[in-house]
Image (tube, rainbow, N blue to C red; front, side, top):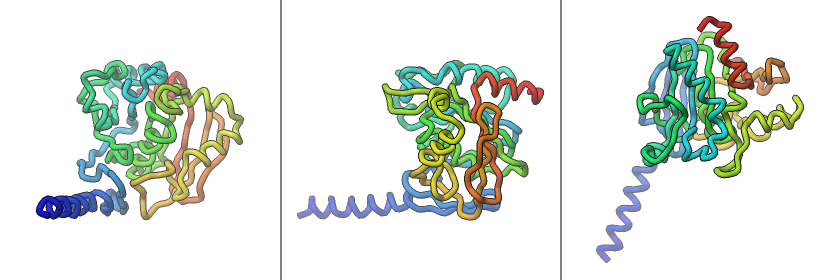
Amino acid sequence: MIRSLIFTLSLILGQFAYADLVTTEFSSGGHSYRAEGLSNFKYPFITIHEDTLLLVTHASTYWDNQKVTWPGINPLIKFFKDKNLPLKYLVSLHEKSFQSSLSFPDRIIQDDFHPFQGDSHRIILRGKNLILTGGNFTICACNAARSIIALSETSETLNVYFVLDGIYEGQQGITRTLFDISEEKNDNGFIKYLRDSFFNSDGLPCKDPSLFVLDRSFIYRIYRNGKFIGSYGNGRTPVNFFFKSSHDIIKVLQSQNF
């Protein structure tokens, strides 16, 4: 009887504790948000004031055990490190737990780590350029993009660069780069792929998100290999999506005198 009562109380207390994680409303930069599910809303916000940020998402051998994304990731990390530009590695709890037995892309160190549960990384970008690499395109990478778009405070159009040879699709052990997938599709097919697999009905990336903006809507202009191929959404806040190789993205950065 006593054991049963203790068990029941632990369940009730557990539900109250979990309820604190399930739904929380907060604001940033004059915008209101609601976090649901296993969210990182308790982690502190950090603000990136520089014009351009590189986010590397879930690129260790825990997730990408074939290192298929590393040829696209490593040149960008080198460029950002050499130029002393802001870089954050979005690290999962799994990667932190097994860190000593994992390999990470070249020159990634613990000081680069920023917590990322898969739904929110709590980074506020006041610049206008995000370079996004690493991770599964329709899971980790899209959640990284979702958070940065929702939390962005730039006064200009936000440019999000997806590194075609530095992002993968598929599950552990059976993965291909986004470049391979892109090559198989014509422009209309790629737009359909984004609409069916990447965007949510709320107008932000990710089909099953746990962080979403309440008071903004977006329109996305989509470019692949330098060519405008279409748009998605009918909101008022513009976002440019560029799908390029790491080599071409570095050329863009060099042309901007970084």
